Length: 192
Image (tube, rainbow, N blue to C red; front, side):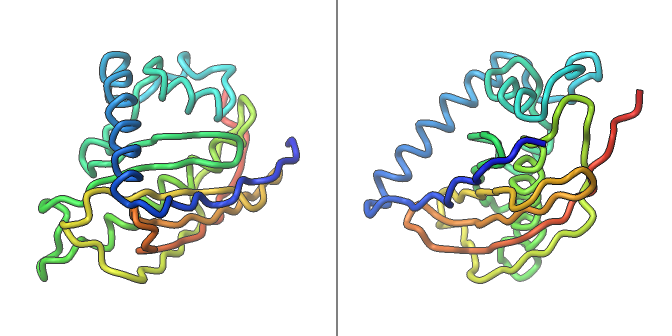
């Protein structure tokens, strides 16, 4: 595996409205490309054969490979991928509420798990895969339906032959931290 230095977590600018506008613009442009391309679905093995994890993620962002259907269910999606780094953006909606009227913890966890997993995925050479072995999430502030968008930014801390670890943060355009998490993933050869 190549060595790398994970980029620092992004820091939203001092102007939350300008940050939100930039996020929405990026999301709209990516969604248009992805929906006009392969759309939602699951890649076939022949579509990803020979691709590194990062190449597959970037192909998804270009609309050449389908993006996962869970993105539609949970109203979030991948907005950036680089070596050891992945960023997802999401919108909490009324259908994500728990019985008490708060955004369900599973929504936070799924968004963070996606950023964590794709950060690890970005480090996989062709023919290697991973699966989550452990996921830890800390919710530090409630996301209300008044929060228009949040970002989950994941980055790899370690990626070895058998294990990978990553950390992620979930924050709003004003920089408010809503949750953070970690993962340990098992890394393995994909079946032939």
